[in-house]
Length: 168
Image: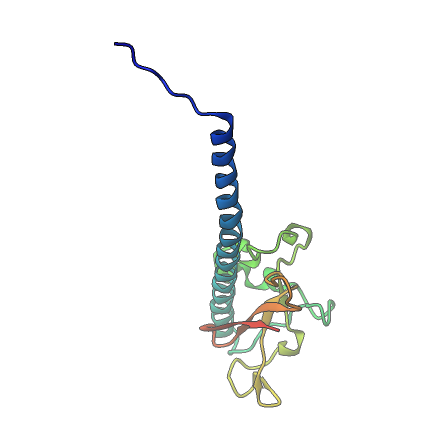
C-alpha cells in the first residue's frame, strides 16, 4: 500500500504565519520591558560600585569628597572618572550606563557629578540640602524614561548602599 502524504494548503500556511506574527507582536513589548529593567538594574549596580570607589577615596582623603567637574560647573576640577579610576581597579566601564547609547560621545561617561558636593565631608549631616539627602552623582540624561514619562533617573547617595531610581 502506498501512503498518501498530505501537504498544507496555502490557506493553512497563511493562517499559521498569521498566528505566529500575532504571538511575536505580543511578545516583543514584553521583551523590551524586560531589557529596560535589566538596564536600570545594571545602572544601579554601576552607581553602587562608583559609590564604593568614592568611599575608598574618602578613606584616603580625610573622608572628604573630591573636587570634580560636572554639568553645573565644568571647570570645577578633573572629571570624576579620572579621580576614581584608581579606586575602581582602573575599570572605566562602570561609568557607562547600559541604557545610554551615546556614552561613547562623552569621555566622562554616563553619570554626572554634583559639583555642589565638591569637597564636602562624607557624612549624612553634611550631605543634606534643606533636610533632603543630596545625591553626589546621577544619570547624565533621562536614559530610563519610558513612553509618557518626562524623567526617570538613577541617583547615587552616600553611603554607597543607597541608590534610587526616581520617576516623574
